[in-house]
Length: 153
Image 1 (spheres, helix red, strand yellow):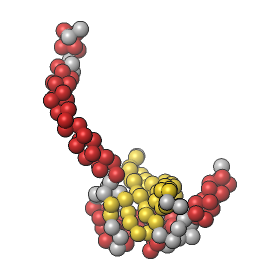
Image 2: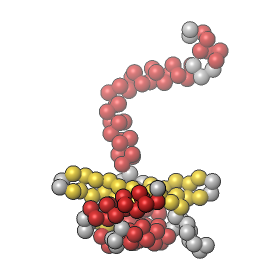
Image 3: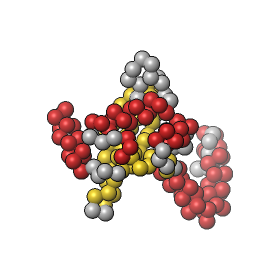
């Protein structure tokens, strides 16, 4: 399995252009903070996204969850693929303070979280169904108790 990962890594490294974007997603589980790093680029006008790393960000005893640690982590990941942090032209991530500070340190724009933009688009689309949604919501409140749901059967 390790050799497959190395071959895929070599393939990604060979395809990466000089300029690209990075998409970050972090989460915590059992007191360990993980970061997934995706690279975003285009080849012949076709958008490509590849997972570069998904690992705990704290590697050393004096590491923390600061933007500095994130920057060092990203630099190490990119070095594996023969790239430098200065090759990154934008970040995609949520609007947390660490990502805001990270984009300032890296001097690249922070593109807002894609899921947040999707949420806004869905809300805009569903505005026309506001009345129906309110009726369904009222019904769901009534169905919360077993006693009430049996009355509606």
